[in-house]
Length: 160
Image (cartoon, rainbow, N blue to C red):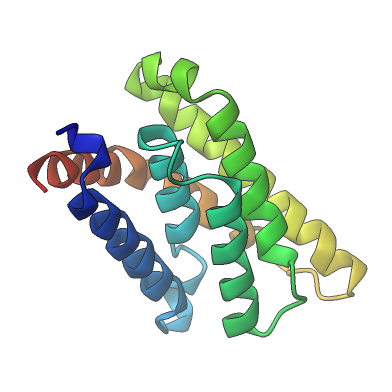
C-alpha cells in the first residue's frame, strides 16, 4: 500500500494541524507575543507542499475561519490569508519542493508577509492597525522556524 494514502498519515496531518492551532491560540507573555510564529500558516504551507491532494485551499479556509472565531476578529480575515497561502503553495508545490532550503526560507517569508499584509489591510479598514513594527516580527520568526518544523514533520510523517 502507498504510504501517502495510509489512514495513519491522515490522522498525523490532522494532529499536526490541531497542534498548530493550539500553539496559535495559547496565551504568551506580552513581551514575546509579537514574536509568535504563524504556526497554522506554517503547518498549512508544509502540508500543501507535502500532501497537496489532501490539504489545500478548503482546509486552509476552514482553519482560518476557526482562528477568526477564536480570536474574535472579523470573520474571514485569517481565512482569506490562509487561503492565499494555500493557493500559491498548491499551485507551485512541485517547483517549491525542488528549491534549496535558503530559497524555501525566502518563499515562506514572502508568503507570511503577504498573509500579514492582507491582515494589516483588513485591520486598517476596521481602524485597528498596529502601532509598532513588531507586527512583522512573526514573519521573521516563522521563516527561521521553517527548517526545523519541516524536517520534524518530514521525519515523523515517514515514520507513521
